[in-house]
Length: 377
Image (cartoon, one colour):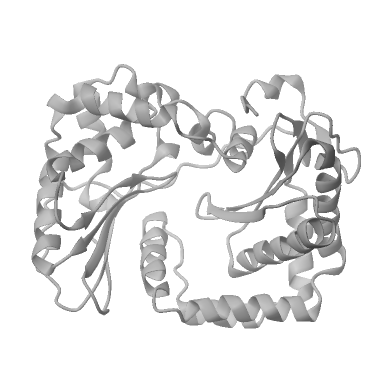
C-alpha cells in the first residue's frame, strides 16, 4: 500500500483513504459506502483520541489523531472491523443514517452536478440514499470486500514518533474512477428554480490555473455585487475534482427576489469581462501572492499529503508545493482569458423563477430535465 509521510510536531495524524465514494454507487444501493463506514467505526465509540470517517464523491476517509500507540491500535482494529463488519448493527446504523439524511441540506452546486450528469455518478450526491431502506447483510459485506482492500487504499501520516502500523486488509485491485457520463444538455444552459440566488457551474481540466481563476472570479464578483452595488451578501466559489482529467468550478451569489436579476446579470458580466480582457496586473499579482503564501503555511503540508493520496488513488500526477508555486508565478492574464473562454462553453446556471438569461448563448433547459431538480425555497 502506498504511504505518504512527513515529519511534524504534535500528535500523530494519519488517514487511511479508499478509492470509493458516492459516484461508485447506483440508485438501488446508494448509501452502502456510508453504511460500511459507520459499521466499521462502531467498535470505536467513546475513545479518548480523535478519529472519524467520511464518505465523499470519490473517496472514503478514516482520519485519526493521537499517540503512536493509539494510532497503531486504531488502524489494527479498523482493518479487522472492515473485514468482519458488525452486521448485527446493520438496520440500526441504517436508521441512524436515514435520520442524518433527513436534516441534510443539498447545496446549489450539488444540484448543478445533478443537472449536468443526471441521477448517476456525481449526480447521485443529490439523491436519497435508497440502499439504506432495505440493506442486505450479504450485499453490504460484499461491498466492503470489493472496495475496502489494500490495493484500493493509500495512507498518509504526519508526526515524529511513528508507530509500527499493521494494515491487515485483503488483497484487491486499484479500481479506477468511473468515466464521467456525457451531458445531453445544450450547453451553455440555464434553468429557473426556487433558489435564493444564482449558481453557476463550469468544468475544465484540473490545474493551478483553474484554482487561480476561481479566486479571480470571486474577487471581481464580490467587489461588484456586494461592495459596489450592495445586492448580494455572500459570493463564494468552490472547486471539486471530478475525475483524473476534469475539475468543476462552482460559483454562488445570494440575492433577494427583487435583486435576483441584477445579481444574475452582474455575475455573468463579471465573467464575460474576465473572459474577454482578463484580470488586470494588480489583481492577478495579489491573488498569486496570497495563494503562494498559503503554500508556506504550517498546516498546508497536511493538505498536500491528502492531495498526494488522492492523486495516487486516481492515477494522476501529483504536484508538490514548489511546482504549484512555480506554475502560479508563471500565470498570465492571457492564460486566464483562454481558460475562462473555454470553460464558459460548458456553463450551467440556476436562476430564480422570474429571471431569464437571453444572451451570451445560454439556452433554457427543457421540461424533460426539470424532473431531475427538486430544489425547494
